[in-house]
Image (cartoon, rainbow, N blue to C red; front, side, top):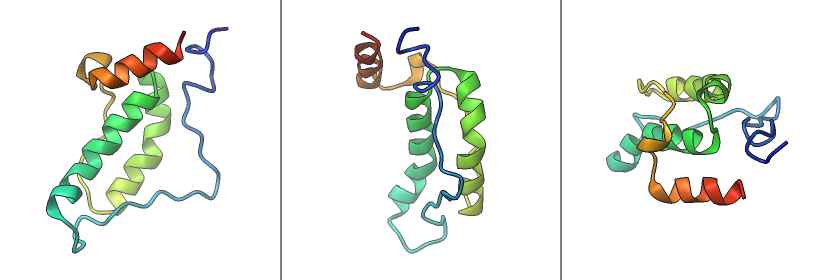
Length: 96
């Protein structure tokens, strides 16, 4: 079994009582930062999780937290071609 196909690498671990909280969209925080929160979460999950199936298993927890914080962004898997080139380099180095 290679590192890339290992279930430990392709899943997002969450403790049972771990509740995801994000800055509320209506809070008195920098608008630029608030605007970037959903996209940043989406990008990070896509970087951590290698395939769409793993992403779909992990995303509901994060989607619920975003919705509870007032965001309407829908999390969707970003294929390798849409990610930062540096993230792709990290993926390939981890797999060696």
